[in-house]
Length: 478
Ligand code: ATP
Ligand code: MN
Image 1 (cartoon, rainbow, N blue to C red):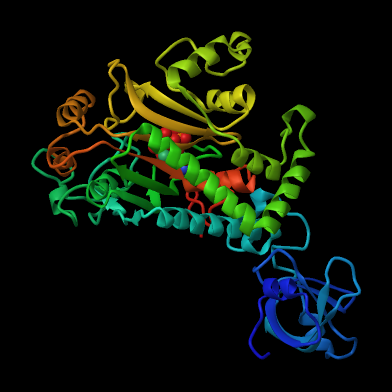
Image 2 (cartoon, rainbow, N blue to C red):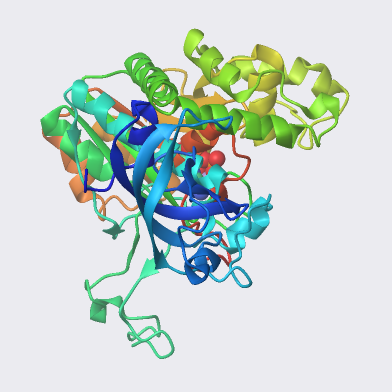
């Protein structure tokens, strides 16, 4: 065997008595004899045994933590604990030196904050290796789920001239001079002279364009980067995140919820099956981390149990109105333990309320439906009561909102009326309204925040630790 073998494949083989070439980065080098080699294909290191005095002094000195090496040798049964096979080095080549006096990633426990500051190197730790392999699997599983169901993967634009939510919080895209932009007669910035001849932004959602696709292709989904300039320094928000947005024609709110629940269960089950080792590692990591917390703050279920529990139970479905009643009458509310007390119907739920419903009251994932129209976007289908819209949010333990979706308003007059009430310019969205003019039908969709999903499946606590290079307020290094 002259080609390089990946360590994961080699360890799975469990055969001995043949020659391999492996390449990777040194994790540790003990007793001038035992190298723990990692190539990122698995968290498990391959043990390389260097025969004493087979290497010259200079090469031995260059086998340091972080160095890239290539080893050719025989696969033999291992006498040591922890691995079935190891490689007896015949030749060893240093590919890239790593100065141990300046290399930041030492063979010891580093804090997540330290690793965030060294995000360019954090892939080389066990935790981040596991997180990003799980992230990869989840992304693949999302595509597999939709592909098996005949959805078309539709690429919606990153640069748009519309604000899908009508919520602001957008990043402007411009080629105009930032210091001295051209002004029009009224003294405002003249976007007619800008690249696109109008003001443009990075997309906050692909939904509106997604609906156009669904009105011909029936079932579509998007999966792409999404940008929100919300200045919220939380562990659940990024300025740049990835969103999955299916849109389905001839689909009502119930079928929409069914699809979302099926998707979540499918991708979690897929990760459990294909990343068992990584999830086991992350489960142990979380147990260790929780040991630092007081007993009452520790989770009842460990990560693996939590994922299995999520697969084995139907999500609880109830209306916003029912949820408000539960929250209002809760002892938590009466004892004033919420930061924002629930006074009555109509207010938006804070993440503390969402988490109370999921973690304390139902102890299961929850889908809330039929929210007050005042706190939801203009495109949601209006209910007969005149007060609520056919919205649905899925709430997860430890996360809060993971999915936000709705059945869309397909009736032109109702939609225009709502846009006028909310001050959304109907002229600018003429193309969106055209779908209601030409062959409109019942349709629905949702947005799943991909990083919130990765947070849930990896058990990590901060969203900045589940995207390779986080973008957040004052954070755009790397
Ligand atoms: P939140 O109330 O948590 O800010 P939202 O109501 O603004 O969420 P939506 O506009 O419905 O969220 O977006 C759909 C999904 O995208 C959310 O359910 C969430 O999973 C994800 N999401 C929204 N904003 C962010 C963000 N800033 N960073 C990461 N994920 C996000
Ligand atoms: Mn938001």
